[in-house]
Amino acid sequence: MSRTVYLNGEYLPEGEAKVSIFDRGFLFGDGAYEVVPVMDGLMVDVEPFLVRLENSLSELQIDWPCSKEEYLEMHRQLIDRNDLSEGMIYSQVTRGMVPQRSFGFPEDTPTTLMAFTQVVRHRDNPLAESGIKVAIVDDIRWKRRDIKSIALLAQCLAKQAANVKGGYEGWMVEDGFVTEGTSSSAYIVKDGVLITRPLSNLILAGIRRKLLLKLAAEHQIRIEERPFTIKEALEADEALMSAASCSVLPVVEIDGQMIGDGKPGKVYRQLRALYLDNARENAVIKVAG
Image (cartoon, rainbow, N blue to C red; front, top):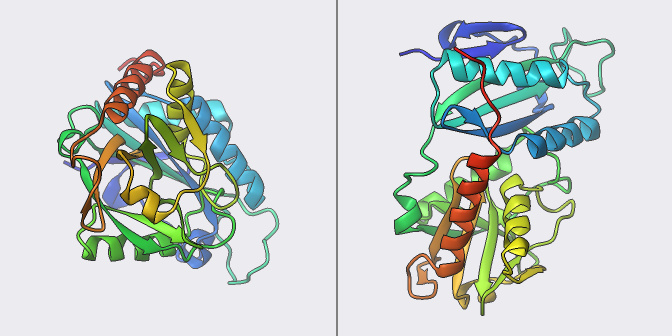
């Protein structure tokens, strides 16, 4: 069955949604995107995802395509029109369509806003019990990784390299330290301490990361925000990742080496349960059908 998608004020069957070849998102990757999880037909983690989109658009000097209220209403309508119970909504804002290809920013160009739904399993995900394998890959990205840019070629190359090595996810490494996953935040646990890289322009401010650190602090899980090496990761008691597409998952193997006892660990299990409970409690009510 065809999904209903959103494009510039219209709800359309996915096969009818068209964007100009002169859109700057297509020509230059000139835009930002966001992803919000959906559970039980409700959006979760809404406030931080609005803040992050605000930051990305501001850093790119792109105007909001609509009010924030209209933006959220569009998400609710997509949930309703696609009868989405569990999954996520991807939205993308570009600088818009221009008749001439030019690197400089055009003036008075309407932005392009599009969004679509995707079905994923947040709660009943078999990987939450089996764990995932991670492969180490080089971090070849630009210096403004804090912007959630649609220009994701480096991440695509890294993810493919990880997949070829048998990894579900790739952990990117720069100057001997893990930065983050190709599409996720990365953590290790040693002696009960949750360790993850501090925020800077070198990583994306993961929303699940923010919430997990908050929940960990509230439940007396010690936290160290610092870079960690591959060696530290391989010698960790546990490892885990978080992302909008999968909530929180355990990492049981890195580059073919078992982490801990090769099973999801205690800290991971506690954090995943805390995150899912928090998501239920803070979900945003959808539009009545």
